[in-house]
Amino acid sequence: MPATLSHINLFFWLYHLFSMLNLKDAALLRHQAFINGVWVSAHPAHTFPVINPATQEPIALVADCAEEETRQAILAAQAALPNWRSKTALYRAQLLLRWRDLILENLDDLAYLLTLEQGKPLTEAKAEIKYGASFIDWFAAEGQRIYGDIIPAQTPGLRLLVTKQPVGVVGAITPWNFPVAMVTRKVAPALAAACTVILKPSEETPLSALALAELAHRAGIPSGVLNVVTGKNPEAIGKTLTESPLVRKLSFTGSTAVGKHLLQQCANTVKKVSLELGGNAPFIVFDDADLDDAVQGAIQSKFRNAGQTCVCANRFFVQKNIYPAFLEKLTESARQLKLGDGCEPNTQIGPLINQKALLKITNLVSDATQKGAKIHTGGNPLTGFFFEPTVLSDITSDMEIYNTEIFGPVAAISVFDTEADVIQRANDTTYGLAAYFYGRDIGRVFRVAEALEYGMVGVNIGVIGTAAAPFGGMKESGIGREGSKYGIDGFLEIKYTCIAGV
Image (cartoon, rainbow, N blue to C red; front, top):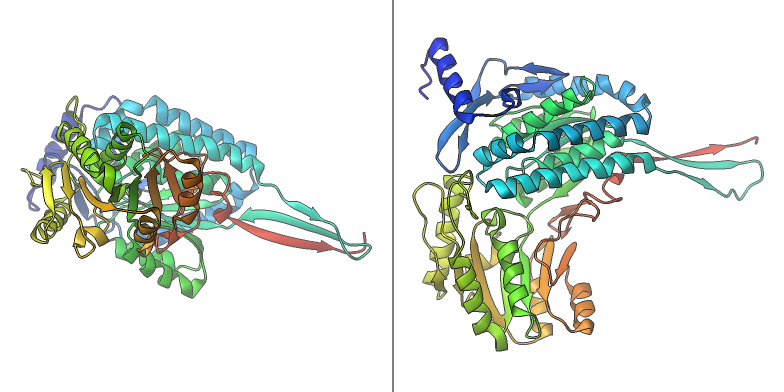
């Protein structure tokens, strides 16, 4: 859309988009930021387009906020904190569960918006929304189980009490690859712990976060408790969040490079920090594995969301005796995957998020083949942001694809000889988020699971995420855990009170 369009033409352009989207509830498509319970435009009234990666067409124009709007959101969250903190855990849980119910009631519209802005197939989008709702359900209950302690005193007449209190205002920065689940996984425990939140969704996928804010408002979550600031300049918004002394916690999911930068910025105000960063997940197949199960797990782990997940299989290691058979089965399964627009029926793999992502995958495959890798299927970019499901063999450690988080639909396979050898190679990375292996020897299962230097390990399974389990990594893959009973801890302060004269 030309920048010189008049306000009248802009109105008709937006009206065309709204009618094209064909939502059951048109009010879920929001284009302004959400601050202190009010939908607000950026000042000055700048916007940026949200692009459908399958068609490369604009879906909406969204408020391009920056420092000023972020400061407003911080002040709103700070002002809302005392009242929100004074409510009972049961009261907060009831509002959270109402929010969950509204999300599930609007499943079709939310999935459609998610697919339009992110690209994943509708079936995956619906699964993500249900997954996201499960975090709200989980933490609504966990918020009612924030227990303290009474410590036996070593001196007569004293009572030693330990209580847990909300950390305060939370800044949350979420990625584009799971624009619903990553929001609820951060916001739900924060609100359950009686914190207030400023959410910065990815500039690639802000519409899902804004729709969630609309539903949170309908659920009765008070003004200022959840604020959403959109903008195409994440550095400016992030810097404002990290520099503010009112923001006492930052939760970020994204690349390791950005996470390190934010961690440095948070040091000046000594904030609590949770970081869920990049991965380089090994997927190991031992010679006693069930090959069909291993191939199915590989397809799920590698090609879900077009390979754009932080925990997806990144480096495949297959034991020498079964290498040819596994390669043949995986190639055939990958070849049958249907690539296309996520809104089309039967699509199994959607587009990459943008041109930059497509160029990255193209260059990784080119570098690998120039250094001796063989293409068994795929290997080519297609019109738009699509890349064929690809299987490469003969991968070596000097190839860029071996050392880089691929974030695309490319399975890069190496061969190994011994258990000790593959453990060493799997751990030879600065990352430590997720790892997978297939094998049926019970002794090996325990040995390998304990030896892998990763925060999450999947054994004979390719998808491991659940609200009940802690999600997070070791080494440069992050700090802290999300989900599970541990996921609320990062939003709480521990207070010790010593009472004398009892």
